[in-house]
Amino acid sequence: MNGEVNNNKQKLTAKTVVLIGIIVLAVLYFAEVINIFKYLYGVIFPLLLGAAIAYVLNILVSGYEKVILPNSFNQVIISIRRGVCIVLSILTIILVLLFFLRIVIPQFSQSIGLLAAGFPVLYNNVYVCASQYADEFPVLQQKLEGLNMDGATALKKVMNVLGDWAWGTVSFMGSVFGIVINVILAFIFAIYILFGKDDLNDKFGRLLKAYMRAKRRERLYEGLRTADEAFSSYIIGQCKEAIILGLLCTIGMLLFRFPYATIIGPVIGLTALVPMVGAYIGAAIGFLLIVIVDPVKALFFILFIVILQQVEGNIIYPKVVGDSIGLPGIWVFAAITVGAGLLGIAGVLLGVPVAATVYKLLDKSIKERLG
Image 1: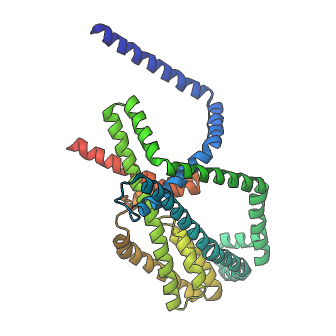
Image 2: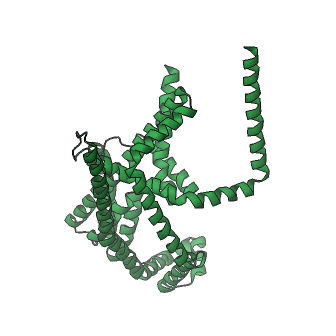
Image 3: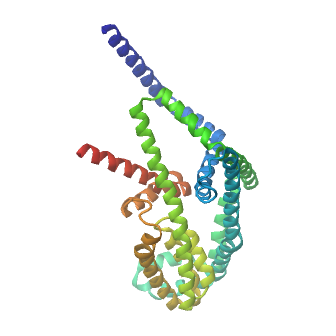
């Protein structure tokens, strides 16, 4: 018995020494370690993207499988049903993409074009208005003198800066080609995952059972179930909210005769995919478009958006989607802020479900400890 205890202690000591050695090497060669991880990430990125695509498609596949012969135990029918559901899910995604490419994206591009066309006039009007009060504010007068350019010159300068960023910092064609290749590989990998998801699930369970204790395995399963619930609810909830908000905004703007209703409504729906702040980003674009035509209507438009957001967020969204994310508003905002700082756009989209998963697991752990 003592020999077994000593043997366990020696194994634990050896593991601790190895772990400390790895940490020391990672600290001493931090730059090299980061470069290795970047290289590995670049290699496995198509697989990670494929897994993400498979996860999103699986939400649709699971939904179709619940409708198409859900009670059949015939293996032939089950195998055919899986393929049919995958095809239907892909067609659904294609239809959604076509909707964005043919309706939403052109409207968004048109709004940017209108902003660019009206920017010089808006700039000159703001400049004239600010110049009237510049004598009372020396700092403002100094800033205006430093600008010393009209609206057309200011727009050209902004476009030059954007052009240098878009074309000068990266090889645009090379990036596009690399993205296309990665997406194709990821999509193929996603199809393989969806066709073999039952077999993969079985092998993953056997692997965990062979190398992980039952208690730890159950904790891992609980964490995965919580993460799956948070991510799937987030994806479905945000898509529903974006569609509802876009339609309500378009209809409301038509009723109140706001200009550019059919342009601003879809844009707000598109930006609403970003939780909390997305709709207000779209509203800012709409405000800039309307203020060029009618400043008074632009102010009423902001009031309309604020009221619409309150109605949609407090009445319609809870009934249609429910408490899908399960994360308090303050933590949603914190998750968006931290995610954007760490990973940019990807962090904005992933920050909320990740935070919701951590929040739910931590809440459950606290309740268990407090009894």
